[in-house]
Amino acid sequence: MDKNKVCPGKILSIARREYNGLLLEKTFVLSLLVQLFIASFSAFLVVGLTSFYDPMALQGMQMKESKIGVIGDGEGELFKLMKISDLEPVKYADFGEAYNDFYDREIDAIIHIPNETAEGNNLIDLDIYLPRSELKATIVSLQLKKPLEKFEQSVRSIRTARLDGYTPLNIQIMRWDKGTSSSKLEFIYVALLPLLVFTPAFISGGLVIDMITEEFERKTLDLLLASPVSLLDVVGGKTLVATAISPVQSLAWMLLLGLNGIGINNFTQILLIVAIVSLILVVVGSIIAALCRERGTAQLFYSLVLILLFMSSYLYTNSPLNLVSRLALDSIGYVEAFTWIAGYMCLAVLLLWMLTSIVEKEHMKI
Image (cartoon, rainbow, N blue to C red; front, side, top):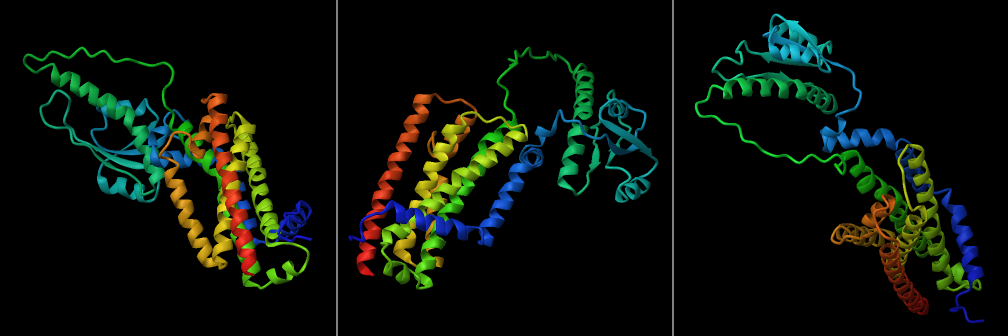
């Protein structure tokens, strides 16, 4: 019997063996738990993470009124504007008393309002003290923004009216009722969803390296090859199980995202592209493992390749990450989507052919 000939039955047998061993891999189980946490609590994570790179995303959300310690003009226009907004201003006679309450977290911020009025000529210099917590400081800043803007407009309208020859510019500003950008939406579909569905694929590529190099390092490959299996069967079985677990995980994460109120279109197409990308990464990992045979070196090369592929994915419109985003938003036509999916499938087939050739050559050396 030709041992170099691929036997599907043997590949499936090895795949079952590797699948049973996966449940004992602590690293794999830990990665599953981390992904499960992210997918399960995505609704909360989106709000928190979005606020870090775009604090304006928190506007419009129902938030507790912040207590603001006010020093100075406690009867002026700004104080009144703060009272009718999402703030609870508290008057203080001096900074020391306000700072003590601020330190004890009785108030959320301190603002010093000078006695200078809008009718005066001097600059109205406000001093604001915010908490160290970035999230709390962001919330307080957003709540202060509205009354401060109204106060600025009021002062500006009074003082500019006194300028000789002043004529306001009549600027026509186009207002769009629809199509405005949402930072939360951008974060979900541009960052969270693609990374979450492709994380299993990234992990699978490293996982197959561990599976293959482990056989070389533990000298168990010779025992396997002593049985009626070829190196191609061994690598094929490991490649199969590493590829198969990825879309299953991605499906689970997308379902959890759906339970968190995140709508995702084109489930089937997304799972198809995830499966193809998983196959590409797993085959790349298998090629590296077959050539290096040492886990540390193979993982290093795979990491470099993964970083290169990840960075290059943003160089063209329909990279796998962008393709998933567009499919989830249903912003791409079926013809265009399947054209790109077919292209990635051709790449996967080419890499499979390369893997087969390399493994057959490596088998001859053993």
